[in-house]
Length: 403
Image 1 (cartoon, helix red, strand yellow):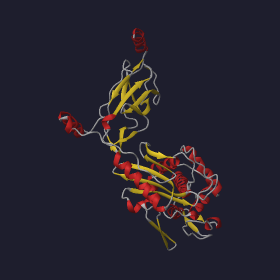
Image 2 (tube, one colour; image 1 turned 90 degrees about the vertical axis):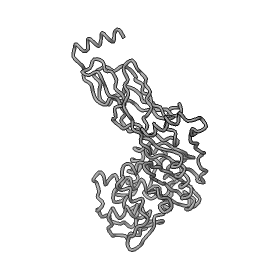
Image 3 (tube, rainbow, N blue to C red; image 1 turned 60 degrees about the vertical axis):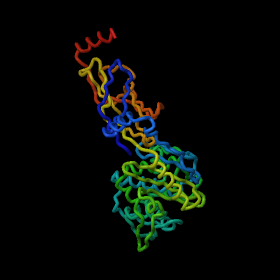
Image 4 (tube, rainbow, N blue to C red; image 1 turned 60 degrees about the horizontal axis):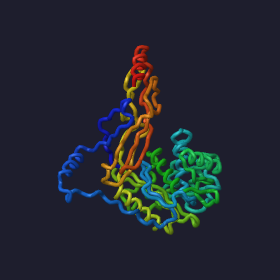
């Protein structure tokens, strides 16, 4: 991620319905560009070339920037597939949410039911009728991918795994995971248990964004419980120094799956590989995607939420200027070395009359890359303006009449 300071905001008046503003550069880089303009054409550096995305051997995949949400490359990203133990990302998300809400605590002790104890597949090796803290169960699920730990958490939080699955689907709907439906907390096969690569990427971004304090557990390479040490199945934690999560998955019908989150400097990428042919293949193909993204793309923060991007004339108000901005920080992901191809423009919908309410939309911010629309965001009033005095209103009415 590369942060470009926004510089001095421009101003839109009522007669300037559209203005252009190129996001500002670092002073040193601007100087270098000026010097480059004096060089003979043969010496000027050509634009950096972005090769085609790598061939990925898997049923479906997606590579996405964490901050901007920009999809760098994907294939079959919306195809319904079995998520296997990638499901446990949502199990963790629900539990983390309950922790943040104060409904449960890390030191709460969950009773281990016979159902949890008997779960097949990967296990933490908890024992029936014992009590285990929520924190230990979370680590057993995240690091060891324990199906027994997943069910124990589901029963502790939801009362039953079935009720917990309803909570999972509620969060999936809220996050916009339209291609996903859960029926259990483990990811064991069921015909009504499915997701997509795009939804898994959306969930991964939410997990990192909403629960950064708990996310660090995904980078742990091993965990010991009850005298048994097990290793994290995510091989990229050992192979790629930028990788710090997230989750593996495998069943006979789902194939081998891996959601990866990696950070280099300030840029974070999320990749999803589903239905690969082997444990080695899911790691290899995920590594390809992550390295491709870091090598050829950069993420820039253009404008902060609440930053004054422009000031517009307000008619009939106590003050004449209304600051406008966006309500969410704007990030863009573009090919490396192509920042100069970005252009910003702002357009007002109409002249602004008082009273003006904070948060009301009055225009649109347009971001273009190479002349094509990249992002559009509503321009909103950053503060309110009350109606002016009778004299102010009369004067402005006369001015508007002649305009």
